[in-house]
Length: 479
Image (cartoon, rainbow, N blue to C red; front, side):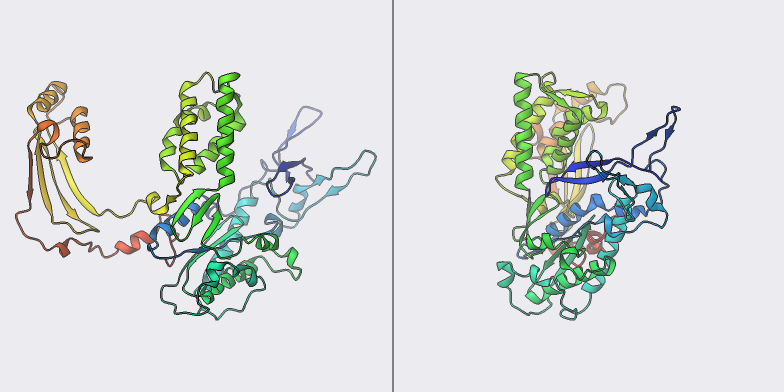
């Protein structure tokens, strides 16, 4: 039997959450150490399910980005109550999870021997994620059945009260009906482009039935695996605007923005740090610094320009000092000031999800540069374009600089100045009528006539390449 200490961790929806410290090592009187429960655990849980944790948000963003401009994406969320406690550990293994209940002085000691998975055990997350991913797969099978063929779920009424849902016709054609279900640990996140209330009911019933096939239902609704408390807070209600994984998604405009409480917290803590740097040197405990940087990194999922600002933070994360002195690090202070400005400015307008996804190119081509100039060709891929061959001759001063800089290094090494000026010309920063630095552009259409339609994409699996990721999960399922 192993008895571990019990830790009370602050929690957002209640005062504290109890977590076993299963990394606790017992020191013996003779000076020896007994390994902790986590150290003595042989890792056997399937890794595939927990590997998906980092992809859930990305898949949702991709699904939004791929939806048509006039589509309306409804979202809902179902939470598993007391998730780890829904899974029983193997007989005999419960003696690894013992703990003593707090009691007043003089009271008898009460020892708890739980028979379910515990928060704090290294294998609890992967085992639970395997179960929740299985429930998602079962829900997907139910979704593929005919709309209206599933029995109504007892919690269905909590999903259909939104005004946008009531504005849909009760029944409609299945044309245009698309859906996607993802799961993040204990949060099931269905999305649907629906043309009727019946279709949304079908998705609700399929997802909740899939959950109950893996996590058995309870006759007492308050003890059911699907959290009734969260349903009453309207988390399971179909809506066009929904808070998911820390962001507020708009299914009409296809945008996302960091949830307001999280944004206000980051703005407040950065303001506190910066003021402290001016007055007291800005001493920040490393654990606090590490936690806030992780939150900033998550926030910049919707603000890609902010990722580059975290470079000074990353340097300190590698060094792991006990205290981060903000007042002595001007580079870090400037980066955090810019992070705060970017967060504040980004709150004015949500980010379109389509801007966060790299799509298929509209045009493709090849270019090459030498001491004489640059040239290449451009053809259409997803957009119409007459195939074009181009050449641009460098002015004499650039040629001389290339010769001087690369003297003795070979005939064709690249010159940084040439690269920079070429990039400027591509971005339109120089006058295109005179070329780079007054150089003479020599651009010519292909000498053959091509119908514009011939430039449209003809790749046989162009669509399938968009639907599959390297991890095998569909980006947008039926999207």
